[in-house]
Image (tube, rainbow, N blue to C red):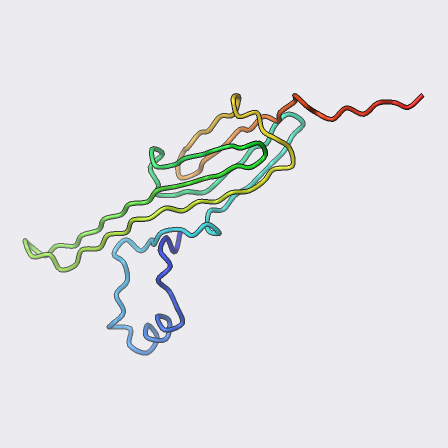
Length: 142
């Protein structure tokens, strides 16, 4: 997760190159992610979809998953607070707050009642069973 808050611009890059001593980087080195930076892998078998999304550094309590038919939405609230001290004097204190969300549509509707989510080591894994009700059935023509 390189940029949770978009603070980079052409001018930032220019001044970082010209006067590197005046450019202040966050202490933690990780900015807040943008929706395009939530990497998602989707796999499918006959009965379900398996979705893996990378959300490193986000506590599982701050992750929300919602399912509306075939649309899956991932939302993460991020709060980071960094402080660097030299004795009792605070040299710099930085805070980052924000949220990021990403939605995508699957080819078939998902049975939300049977869906499961697991978050382990920065990776959110969703097991999303396909909805079997209302499935289009093809009739043989006699």
